[in-house]
Amino acid sequence: MVASTPSWESLYADDKFRWFWPPAFDPHSDPPELASVLSLLDAQTGTRLLDLACGQGWLTIPLALHGFQVTGFDLSTTLLNRAKLAAEQVQAQIDWVRGDMRTLPHQWSDMFDFVTFTLSEFGCFSKQADNQAVLNEAARVLKKGGRFLLDIIVNRDGLVHRGETINYLEGDGFFVVEKGSSDLQSGIHKREFRWYEEGRLHQAQWQIQTYTPPEGQAHTRTGWISGIGCLQ
Image 1: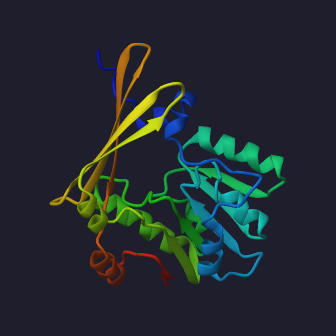
Image 2: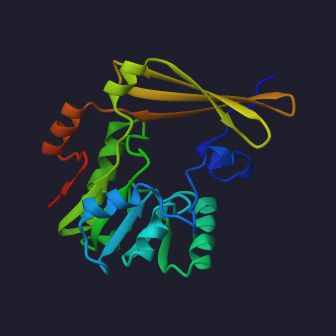
Image 3: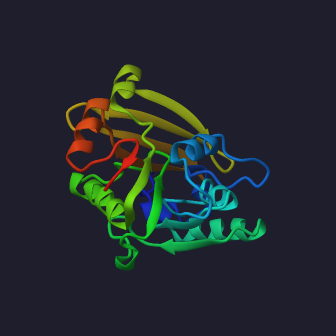
């Protein structure tokens, strides 16, 4: 018997799915990406930064510890609570806000010097209008001349080159089979997860819109953003 597919809310709220969650903050070492982020931002300490889809604070907390005034924003209450606890343990001062990144708080207009959006979460919505809304909101909350760091490591060219993939992940005492596939016509990349737990087969699916480098450049000229740059 196949168990019903858990919703995104369930995946990010139930501890038994923690194998699926974004990485947690490590108090003993900085993430390897931090040096690149700091270099790309080329920012002075004390400037205001918004970390979208911050998850458990893997990047949010190190940025705060390096002197930024940081706001962490995520849809998952469970992940935000874990991030808050981790931040308290290292005395990092961060504003944590729960919400939908397609509609950021109205009062945030022209508020931030920098916005970061990492771990290839961009393109997670099935409708292009929703992905565009994320970029529009990032532009709205940035100050004039502000900069947006967008991390896109899932690119269509690379996925086409690799073809279908099968990986194995370690869950909570069990193994998860992850199958990746791409639809060239729609540009949608899907990852299907299957695992047995207590004798039942469970399934979950994750998908993201992928882009080629030329598409990223074209979208930049028409209001989309690829990489880091000035939005206003």
